[in-house]
Length: 483
Image (tube, rainbow, N blue to C red; front, side, top):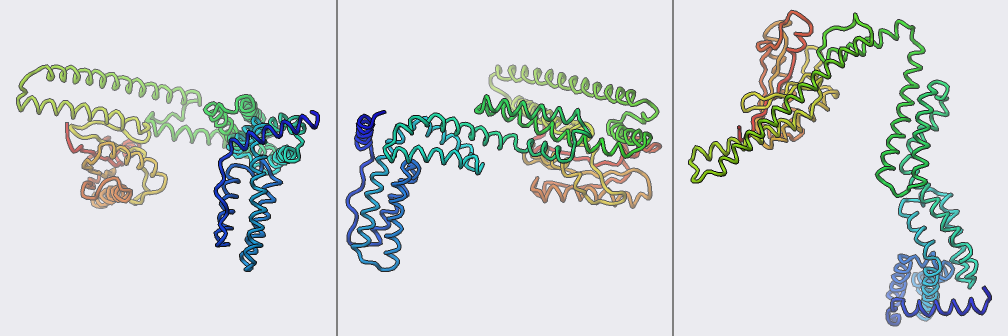
């Protein structure tokens, strides 16, 4: 682009900028030097908010330098005329900077958009990679200040692409940064030699997420899913590596006994009986059958509930068609509504708990949560942290019913004296009540704790399994409006 044409273009854009620019406030105050400096500082702040400091960096720095001289002069008690001169110089520089900034916005429109996108995702926190691109950008705006429009136009696309690169880099850093770090830690620990299959699976998941982000940086939902999968696979890799090293240190028999112990814990939770005389495949098959039976039972319960809801709906339709309801009919309608609400909440609460945590069932107008998974130290009533997750779910179940009344029942097996067991069951029920009250589940006057010792067994005391079933905490929830 020849110089005369370039000057003509710059003049046209400056004229356009002058026509579009926001009018400047009236003349600077002349009576109060403090007000003079303060007003100029406010104008610099507004200009910086409009990115004038990067769109016309040289002129903005001149304005900033003049402001600093004016402020220093004010602090040292300089003459008003000197302060006015500094402010006048700075205002002139700032005015030219705003005009050049408008030119930069016109010439670097797409590049500015790319820069804004990069900043929006935190690219400036990348450090050196971002600063390198920012330096390239400042060369463009300084070239425009120096009337070198051809340089800015020639290199704008390259800087735009560089901003997009650091934008994608920042997106990757925030989404798959943890997975990358885990893979780097794995490389230092030589996990590839210890667990090569798991390592390759994790690396593949990370590479797939990385490639997808590069091609689809704005597909936030899918990126989140792929990043979560990459992090999961990396964590899986570390767990397999750790387990592999532990098994390597064991004898074959110790490894078999370790696996047997894990399966035995599951068997006790699922009440499948002692399956240790079977192969691993046989034990897993038996547990799978138990799970399938539970699922079928749940499906049957769901079907019964749907049928019950259908019956309630039909009865409600019949009631709606009647005229002149009697008091008994109104009562029946309220009861049906209460039953429907109770059943909906019952179904909701059932889904809170795994089978090994608690059994949920209806008992008259009450909902009973039989906590199978709660554990106390032998002979004690102290709640340990491993119970908090289960108790939090019990809190959620209680809150589902609004402001019900709650009875917490403690039960023991018959081992030991009846008096000791009675006292222990009462203390354990009180411990659960104290936890629920302390966590603001319900006011204390709406909760009651009762210990029954071994007087209400669920199973014969002749087997360890039966005694374990009898050691329990039952939570009885009575809605404020019973069905």
